[in-house]
Length: 312
Image 1: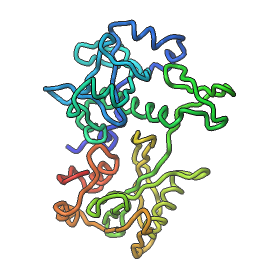
Image 2: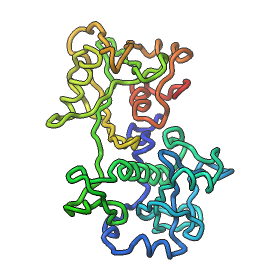
Image 3: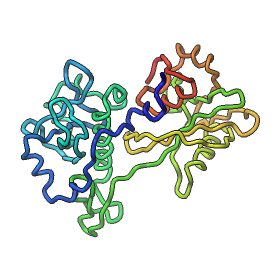
Image 4: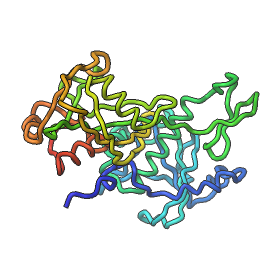
């Protein structure tokens, strides 16, 4: 049986208790570093370190062997993980390129984009949280208000302006992604200017200030394709920490007769309608989004089951 939509979003599976009250503890990270039961998740950009042999799983390190780097408290295990009992504290450690190279060979590091669907809920949840938080730190080394350097507080969850002393909190950029169908229940796919010409996906875009999600769906679709849609229906959401998005999935139908397709020529270079049979028959010539993405989940929801295809 095809699992429900929300269960097929690889990065939306909760596996950690974020233990937010503990972030207020003074010296939390130093104390956790001194406790042998703490486990450390090394990350480098959007890459995670894998165990060797056996099932696909993240390599978590004990305090004694975890390298130095920016430390971010992720929370506690909700259930046991191997030899680590429920309640084990997990800390991400953000590495630079030298530390990454010293810790493990390149082949043991893999982008979360490519393998999240193979991880269990605990590992996927921990890696998503860690990478999203690390990307926020990387882009907020100075205060946007004063330009002063920031100080890290609350185990990595707050940055403080070193001059004006105001707090900065992690940000997430809202984005919509939509499966558009016409009167014949065909699905609209587009090829982005930044991709190879045989890559196709759903239309998507960021929500603008003062705009509802539904308004963003209607606006973005028209801007990128010239198609007017109606009745946006919310499906579910998935964090996309590359670097800081929350993708909110929708279905929508064409408003009236199927309009002439008009790719904007800037973001979208080509648009095509696909029936289910046409999409299946085209899988030898086009690439669809990979199974980690919400785009793939929405496409398969429309299709009615898993699609076997090349993917990016």
